[in-house]
Length: 398
Image (cartoon, one colour):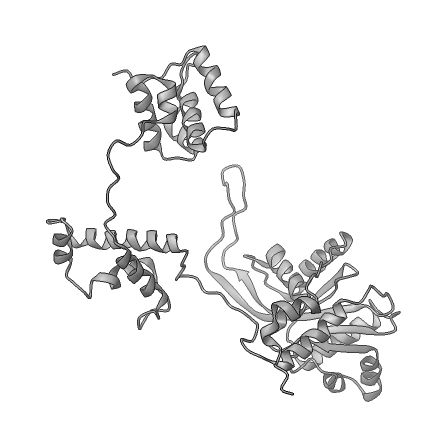
C-alpha cells in the first residue's frame, strides 16, 4: 500500500480555509494541519513525522494513525470528523468505591519512614497489604501477568483518580495567618494598614525594612559558558562554602526606591548601623521616617544604645516612627516583596563567593529598579481585612 499523501490543489485550499476558520473543533483543526504537513504534492523532501507531531502537539504514533485513516478512504470530510463509535466504551476497571479509597489514603498521614505520599507508594500500599498480586490478577482476568503489571495498574489508576479529584499529596502549602481569634494580631495589622493608607509625603516617608540570610558559595571548577558548540551553560555540581551573610533591604513603596546591603552578620549593632545610614544619608532631609518591619528581637531602639553613645542613639531614635507587623504577619511587610524580586531576579541559582561581589550585584539591581521607579501597588486595606479575616477579630463579650 502506498503510504504517501498527495492532495490536489482544491483539497489544499479547502484544508487551509478549514484551519483558518475558528468555528471548528480543535481536534478537527489538528487533524487538518497534520494532513497538510504530510502532503508531498510538489515537494521534494519528505516531511518527517516527528516534526509533524511536535508542531501539532501530539505523539508520532497519532500522526501515523491519522495518515492511515486518511489513506483508507481518502475522504477528507470523513477524515476530519471521524466516524462515531459503534461499540460501547470499555467499562471502567476501577469502581467508585476503589476511587474513594485511593483518595482517602492520599489524604491520610504518610506511613512511618516517609514524609509524604507518592503515586508509587499509593499504588503499593493500596492493595499489597490486602491481597497477593496473583489473587488480584486472577480476580481481574489477568492470569499469567507478573506482579509488575499489578503495581503499574494501580500506579496509573492512582494518578488518574488524583488528577480527577485535584488532590496533590506531593505538595504542601504554608500559611502565615493564625487560625483563630487573635486581638494582638488584629491590632498590629490594622496599625500597619493605616500606615499604608497614608498619602506620599516627602518629609514623612514610609520605609519598609526586612532582612534575609544568604549563603556565599564559590565554584569548584570554572563553569563553561554558552557558545557555538555549547547550547547551555555548564557548571560543576560541587561547590565551595565561603560562609554566610545577611542582606538588609530598605524600600519606600510610594517613592519607588529601594536599597539592599550585605553584612557578615545581622546582630543588633549591624542593624543599628543600617538605621544610622538610613537616617543620615538617603533621608537626611526628612522630618520623620515611618519605619515598618517585623518584630525581630534586634529590631528595637535598644539596639541603637548598644552601638552608639547615648546622645547619638537618642538622635537616631527620635527621627524614627516604628510600626511592627504582627507575629505570623510578615506578609504585611512590603520589603518582603522586594526581597522576593531580588531573589528571583539575581540570586537564584548563582554562586557568589564574597560579600564584596554580592554588594556589587545588590547595588546594580537597586539602581536599575530605582531608575525604573518600580513601586509596590498595595490593595489590601483595613476594610478588606475586617471582611476577609473576620475570623481573627475577637468577639465582643459585653
